[in-house]
Image 1 (cartoon, rainbow, N blue to C red):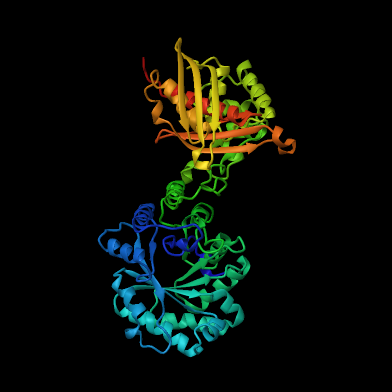
Image 2: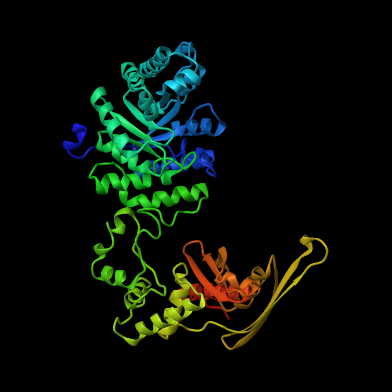
Length: 531
């Protein structure tokens, strides 16, 4: 173990490479504006370094560095990324190195080869020239006033192949004046015990700041970063939500709270905004958030079993390893067939509907809940439908309208584009009969249009509601076409998002139930007058 651990907590620098390494992940792409907006949020979050990309490699990165130069960064230093000079070419004449300087960033990060296999088979040069390439490039950048981060690519593979060669490349970076050398597990195949032992050796040999850059190909990207810090590394590179090539990079959203809350290190970022930054970057990437993500996922502090909920109600630490608020998350009580009165009580309190724990109402809601879930309903992801269930059970729900009947038709003539869906809806609203007709792209869309048209004269704010997501699940598929269908609809008014559920042997009926609950939930919470 490196002496730094015995000396107590470290100040660990957080180096974010979401905008460069993260964009190499499948399905991840950011515009120039996206990159600037993400960089601004990362700066607010408090990271120490933001790697913006590879200058000159593509127009988006060129634009990013141009815009970054115009801005003032409160916490972070912007870094440009590139490689060492080419073999057998003076560093002053290397155009790629020139573009690194032209980016005018305070920090430049360059990578070089640590594995002799790459030196001889990829670069097709000698180990001595490879060390010269590293040393010359670092020195040249330092002479131009840059802070230099040296990324030792494939370091752990190179070390295991030829430790002397790998260490010599780090020494070359140190001789050139590198501010920090970063050990990279580029292939993501090294185990935590190996990372810890090798990092410990490097820290002892070099006596200079050491960093760690890991990938998650074996599922231990975060564990490897923590192992390196245990051995003395004081700089961790990674990406928000683990974005990156193949299976991704070290997930900083998991690494940061582990470093700060579990290991006692100082990281500089505002850990209470962890959930916020995680969701923000997912939104910018147009990626669905991982609901089961440690610390920041929706289920990270969710409780379902009745005994668990009863314990959490008395003392949250019985089943929560930290307070959810410390990472910007919240406790989430689930309701299902496993629920007891404690689940219902806490969920109702969360919704602002007080219930007597020992009263008949709580027991009645539990029984209704179990009966409905047996029929195929599921309320874990349909909190709005659950709230309506509670309100109806307690007599605290005012019926907004009554269905008389609805009818859906689909007409198709010739080609597919000639298909038309039409829905008619008959309602009784505030004692008045309403009959409306609407067309749509499908039967559910047509029903949505007809229902809105019928409600609009009475509830003027109905058009604030938009359908955000629509999911269909076959409950008992073994019964074939006679199977029950569960429909989950997610809606929003631009400020709040809620989900509702419907179940039926008929997919249209299931959709109607979920659709009606969606409008009922919104109008109950946001009453508006019409005629």
